[in-house]
Image (tube, rainbow over all chains, first blue to last red; front, side, top):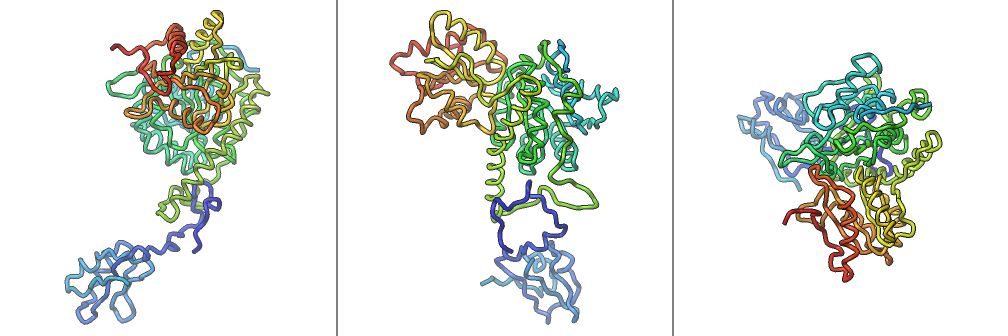
Length: 92
Length: 391
C-alpha cells in the first residue's frame, strides 16, 4: 500500500472504509515470530484464545499457526502455552 | 434590523449564540464564564432555541461531548475559563486534528496557583499550539459579533477547524454595555446551515480519530498546519462579508493613530480601549504615539503585523501572561520572531501587566510610553519587565 502524501489525506483523517485496519500489516512491527513444535502441541487452543491480535488460527489438521501479516511477535502465545510447544525465534 | 440593547456581555454572548441555530451545547459553569452557561441553558429550557443542552460533570466532559456531537454533524458550542480550559487542554488538539468546527467562548481568567478568579490571558496561552483558530475581542459588540462570525469561519468547507473567541473575564463578561444585537433574520442570512465534512451515521460507517503511527503522523501534522495557515484567507473573506452586512469591520491587526507614530504599543483584548485613552493623552502632549491591536492570535498574521510595525522606531509589546523562564511574554516572543528577518524593525520592549485582574489605568500605559521614551541608550530594549511589581 503506497503511503499517502499530506495533500492526499482526507480532511480530519476520516477513515471511510469500514474494516480497513485489516490492510495495515502490523506484522511489520515484529522482531520475533512464534514457531510451533507440533510434537508437543496438544491442540488445546489456548494460543488462539490469548492472541491479542486474533491472528492465531487452527488449521485443518487441528494444529495452530499465526498469520504473520498481523502477528506482532508479542510472545503471549508462547507464554501461555503450558506444554511449551511454542518458541519465539528471532526474525531475519 | 438588529436592535440597540443594553445588556451584560456574557448574557449577550449566549443570546448571540442562541441566534446561530446551534444543535447542542455542553458547558460546565466556571467563574467568570458561568453566565454564558446559565443563560444558554435558560434559552434551551424555555424552548426559545431548539437545541440540546448537555449538563456535563466537568470541562473535560464538555469538550468530549461537543467533539462527539460535532462528529455526528451537530453545530456544537461550549464555553469555559481558566481551570476549565486547562482541563479541556488534552482534547483541544484532538478537536482540531479531527477538523471539527466547534466554537468556544473563553472568559479569560488567571490560571491557578494561587487561586484567582480575575482576568488575564494565562489560560489561553498554554492552548496556543492546539491548532484552534484563536480570536481576541476588545468590547461587548466585538464579543457578540465574533461569537456569531466564529461559526461561519469554523464551518467553511476550506477551514473546518474549531474556533475560540477570547473575551476578557469580568472586564468584559460582567460589564453591561450598549450594542447592536443582530436579528435572527440577519443571522440566518449570514450563517448558512452546517454541512459537515463527514458524519457518524450507522448507514454509512466511518472512523474518526483513528490511530496513526510514525508513517503518517508527520503528514497529518503538516496537513493540520497548512489548514490553520490557509484559514486566514477565509477569515478575511468572512470579516469582509460581515462588514458589508453589518457595517462593523474586523481585521487581523487593527491600529489606532499608528500611521505616523514613532512609538507604538501592542495590546490584545480589552486593554486596547484604555491604551487608546493613553495614546490620546500623549498625542495632546505632542508625542507621536500609536496603538496596534492584535485580534487574530492563531493563525498568526505575520504579513499584517510586519506592515503595521515597519515604520515605528520603538514598540512596546504588552503581555497578560508570562512564559516562565523563557523569553518574556508569549506575544513579545511571537512579535520578535515575526520581525527577526526584517531589515527595518523597531526596538522592542515588553511589559507583563494586568495579571490576576490587577487594574491597569490610563497612567500605567502613559508610564510605559514615558519609560521607553526615556531609554535613549536603548538599554531596556529586548528585555521584559513585570510592570508595577513591588520591589
